[in-house]
Length: 240
Image (cartoon, rainbow, N blue to C red; front, side):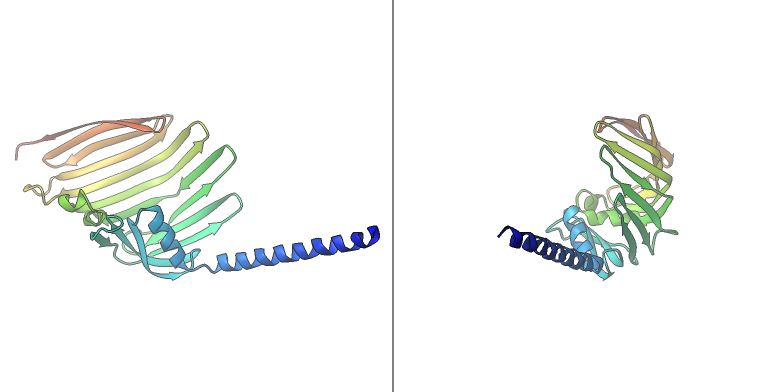
């Protein structure tokens, strides 16, 4: 009896490894050819249905779609980004890489990488330049549907690096948002002005708002304490 058990046990282990390998291979194959629609479902769920991908093509790893901004589940507000969004996702043992490009608004793709570790994770973003019409914000619902913003939004950055640890976080780099010739249906004066909002990294990241030109003068500065932003701003109007 003892001798027969010694012969049977290795066979049972062998079949167990074969089954596990087959299931792993099947899972890998399914994941490798997962349709882009799966990514659309994940993005819609994560954003509360505020970001939607439709007319998807390709896979979750290499595909394209049209992007829609929405006010959320049940909202009738929606604005569509002109053209298509394209993405390439590469998954590794230590992180994930993303290359993103919008036909309408980005002269070159944006490269991002997320690397995770036991005590610290790091998100890096390469050079960014993107220009979007401010009207797209109305697709996000209230209060933008009342404001009805118009103008041009430009995002640019030479690169960013965000490190998140178990007890603290740090940011290196710079990100700037330019709002040119901003107008609103709530104001009779057109345009209200052009503004710059800049995020600068360092030991204590700083957020600054300034007016470039226009009758509505906005200014402010803020900094982070832990995960909380403390911001003080001022608004004034110059005589027409």
